Amino acid sequence: MPLLTSCKTPLLSLLMLLILQTSALMAGEPVTPTETIRLLNGKDLSAFYTWLRDTKYEDPRKVFTLQPDGTLRISGDGFGGLVTNEEYADYYLVMEYRWGTKTWEPRKDRSRDGGLLLHCQGPDGNFGGSKDQPGPWMNSVECQIIEGGVGDILVLPSKDADGNPLPASATCTIVRDRDGEAVWSPDGKAEVFTRGRINWFGRDPDWKDVLGIRGPKDVDSPGQEWTLLECFVAGDTLTYRVNGVIVNRATDVFPKHGKILLQTEGAEMFVRKLELRPLPKELP
Image 1 (tube, rainbow, N blue to C red):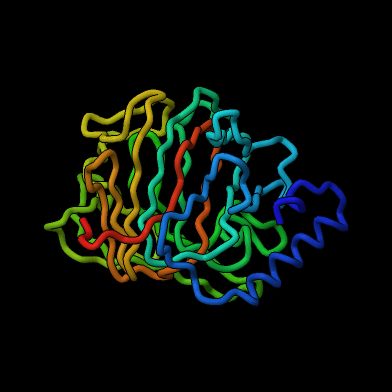
Image 2 (tube, rainbow, N blue to C red):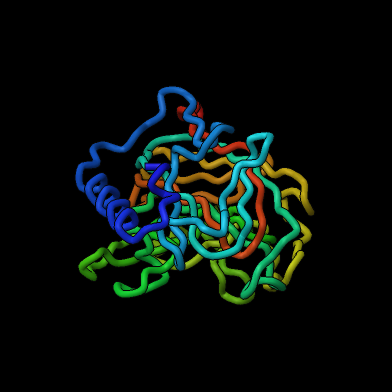
């Protein structure tokens, strides 16, 4: 699989697509970690395949590269992601990342943006595009990574290869801010979301999509410092923690298993740890 991701000929690209489609049809139960699974092993990207909106399964611009120290560099040049070969369920995801300084059009002057799509289902590119022109993402529930909004939940419903709906949903306890946006609160009212965003609890209501934006309550690390992001995925519940602070939570999540997609979305990012561990006995 990793060898084919670098192939340049149309025939081998078609072969890659057929292999991925066959793998999806033959896929069994999702993997639940019994020990630590290092998605980033510091040596190669064999746990993933590449999906970019413009070049599909090829990465001619080297958007995703390992640095000499084993850290992953995401250049940000393009929209898409690294997608796990396997589906996963019931895991404790640990990620350490930091922003780079490079940004790209059309988000060159916008807030640095990325994210983790959890529970990805359906064909690659089924969200954000059309049947004839696939998009960059997949049917999923996202853990947002964006300046000022790290830990937002995004519910991303889509369609399968035949145009049939691929639903997604999450139930969150929320309050509404002055603009009517949903903000997670453990003491809020439960509401079902079949699309859209649930802000983390401290997101600045004056947030603007501008480069370097930072709110007064932001708990992710500033500038180019490392941030610890944790996702506790237990059955149909999601809990997001940023630098040790629980920032968002959802229950009755659907789908509740799938692939994991690490996004490129116009901003340079470095990732030095991305691993799945067994869930702790006591969940936060």
